[in-house]
Length: 71
Image 1 (cartoon, rainbow, N blue to C red):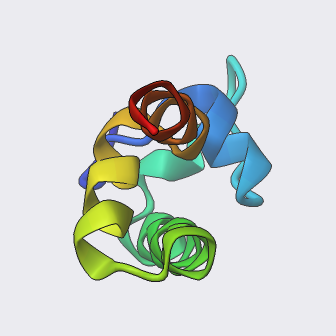
Image 2: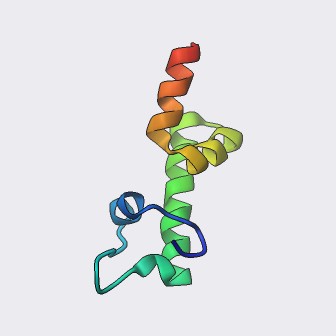
């Protein structure tokens, strides 16, 4: 939900509140800060902006599994 299309668990992991009453994914400023942190974490993990963008789409964990599987 929201501009950055963050899934609830990712949003919460990056400091946003998501519950029945509040969904900070809809706050453009807060969600942008969370998305930037996610992209920066992905870049630190993969040392590649291309892989950071891919990780944003599928998740850091899934991208790690795919890379491991493909060696």
